[in-house]
Image (cartoon, rainbow, N blue to C red; front, side):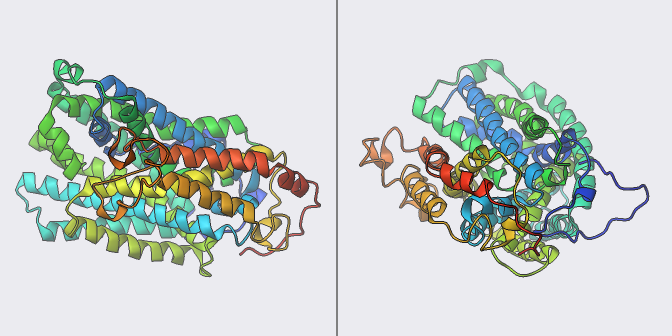
Length: 491
């Protein structure tokens, strides 16, 4: 978001946690949402998603269609939820208390926290591995020492942004957007001669089930990975801001870079089977193997900055989710706690994990199911409401939104159970228990045609949305007829 503070004012650690942003501090316009969303998604990791999509056994045109639909549709969900921030002035996982109740909301808050910590860990690990690959090609090392230094630098940048908070993040994202955007264009120009359309166009088409699997994977890898943080930045906008503008700029900012990167990534991966395979092991580092030596250092810069841009937003939102789950500490300390966990997880991925892509896909689909259920419930609850949120009621167990209403929790559990029964991931041994409904529902079992279609994510989203739309209408109507609560302290 554009820096609306007076010139020369120094950056300070943000003191806001779960509290409501006062009207005096709400500035800007919907178009300023473009910067954080574009900066967080301009990473060259988007190129690697071309290989990920083709890995489902589909053609270039099928992968392109799956990517376009999956990316835009998933960021559109972010746009809808971002409207809640404009209407309520609180973080995303506080606003969902309107649907779940004040303490009932701790369940989705914990899931959101795990997802965001997982994402920031993955991004930091990728930045570290990419740096090591570049140093290896340059003959500057690339072994354990290089990885340790790279990990320390990348983690320091990410934790500093997450702990300092909103002002630094908005400044950082603007810089990342410009630098990464320019260098990515240079990368595309330099490797364009590695594209062979005859090879790409000869890739055979896959089945409808494989296409759906790629589509859902693109949704979980992009917008569905951000829905639980979608209102964290729009809450700083004035309440009078255009809802259409919030939706449009969030969707455009989030999807613009991934769409362009995906097209080029598909062309590169489809042109070279060895490159396609290498990306599965090192999604960013593999992209350096086709670069001239002189551009390796700029590439390392663009890779690290792009990944840090996403990780900074994740660590900021994961800290807010941890507070919403009930941890009684200031926001900056919650972000610091998440930073420690992020470092530990990154060390495991960089130094001990053998199969990155399998574990990554398993992580996305497994946590994508409960987040999709939460997203469906949140979207339906938002659609049912005709008034702004009762800010004080979001912090009172005896207030308008209640304490632990059973309906949303039961819907979340039911949608998650349904979803996990319809997804599989054989590359991650700890997830072999999933897919238990594929046989009973006549979908061919865990080895059938529907085994890798990831239907569970869509099923959880649909059940959460439709169940809330039908069953919660009366509850929401009753809430909105009540007199607003008096101001209260946050919790």
